Length: 260
Image 1 (cartoon, rainbow, N blue to C red):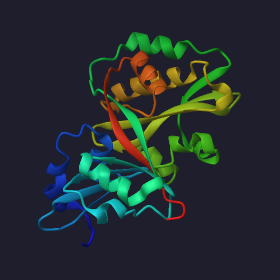
Image 2: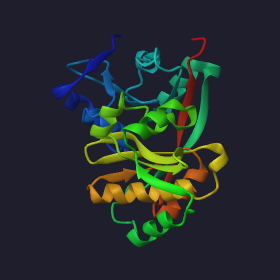
Image 3: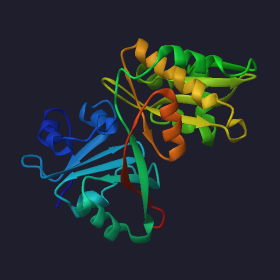
């Protein structure tokens, strides 16, 4: 079976395969904001794959070729696969064996009217006077990209111009140095998917809480939705502290492509 890259009007033929997925990364690709979409047939698709950032989403009838298809392999040796059902999951496990690590992630409800502006402003003001909160600009973008811990804040935007055009983020600075941030991991028409990172020695100081609060307020001002998906329970707790509500657990696979 061949794998086809699709764009434009062709996307309408596979969009229904992702019905019911409250996942902004999928929306980003289907809206052609970021990412790529692939299918098993141009005219009569029965399965589809969305590849965006470090994620891959699989829907429709399970197809081995789509499970093995990785157009980003030259850029990354790691990908997180999310499947629509157990049949896809079984195929992922059979295809990648020990290279596939089954994990649990945590979906957060998408509720546009749950945020308390006064509470968020208080969060911003809670950090000490030694810290400065700023929107991510060209200089901060370069700082973020220069360090491994902070790269995901901006890495899905190919350069500072692309980030300026489509991205949105908040940085916490200590003596001019980036030490924490909340930013758009990806972008879709109606909002962003939030990425949170803090330098190890500056954790547990409320910096991520303040940065995320500022980013949510910036999104509200721009009529964008600040979507949140949690990698771990710490992230769930932070989201709930900001006003979000937990939705459900879901299964994903961390795929290591080294040696494949």
